[in-house]
Figure (cartoon, rainbow, N blue to C red):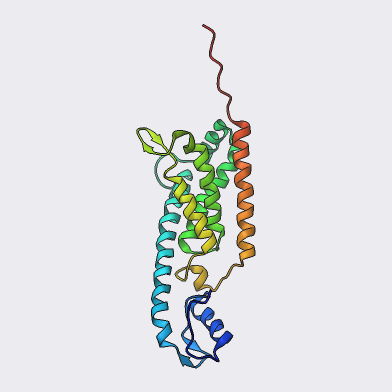
Length: 224
């Protein structure tokens, strides 16, 4: 969506194309019209909006990616105490998320790998997309049965669900200008974005189905 008005009527598509080159995406103004005239009346307020939006993306990436990344590093035993992939795999097997080792590797890749990509702003939808899928599974598998709130010995789903929503939003919106993708001039088409999110959705459904089908059966009460 074009949100600027060029003072030169003859600038047209050339100005819009230049705006994309200067600012990385349509809708944030441009520095020159037709390669010559400086649009100072337009650039200043829109540049301010542009910087505000990119700061918001940057903060969101650092916080969401950084928090999720720590959980992946914990599973690798690199932070915290006692974490290991075999330990995670054993727990997954015990709750019906099988094969446990496969899903443990997926979880580590999603959380550590996806978190790092998101913090760096690299890989477009790959990092936040797989984080979103992982967090949906985490919400259902580890938190849903404990209710909404965290506290009183329970770990409810008030924590992972907002992380999942924020990750999904980043996968849709992108990383902003303050990112390695922007620095390296890497762009991702909407078709690629939706294709990747579709793959993540299939994987998420597969994990939830595995947990549902293989969930341990409740033990029958013993006879008195």
